Image (cartoon, rainbow, N blue to C red; front, side, top):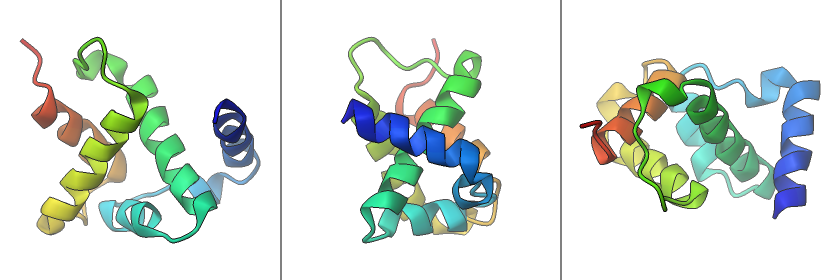
Length: 102
């Protein structure tokens, strides 16, 4: 699994247009893709946003990366009216709703 994540991150660096989801619609498309590659890109995108904007979110200890990614995927599926908004903002919003800062 670790090799897969590293490989995806390398691909993201080499092909930034593949991994750059500008809107929630594009991010949802990656989340629903039947391709292992696109699923990995979705995972890497969510992880990258959470790493880059870590001071805005309060993910509790013990939450796995897969759990955080699942929270974002569920948010995208449950809130279709927001999918025109920037993808990174939706990732942060989903995590903040799941685990609000105290």
